[in-house]
Length: 123
View (spheres, rainbow, N blue to C red):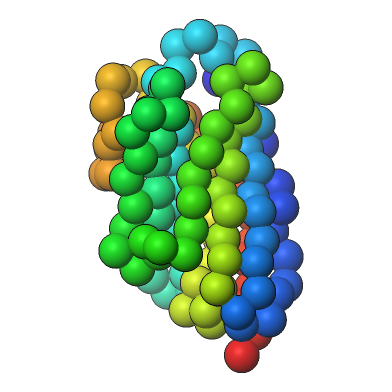
């Protein structure tokens, strides 16, 4: 499975961005898909995840109410709509895919990773 993330960029605080992550290869093996982020000098952290059906989602407290994760299984693509962006949201955002049932929040719950897309929020 290969994951290709896109949609990052520079945005002012309060603005919005939508990230996309397209999966290719043996996509039938994918269950949950998620987003993580890593700010300079910090560890990679969980942002959001969504189940295979899209019926279950989970968010980090820091983004709850501002970010929304969704997926289009026909396109093998997961999205992250980010609204009301803050400077502290600045990071490289990574998409990930899991072979396991559920909505894992830990890095270890994912089997495949994309290359990352940079989001910069200016104050």
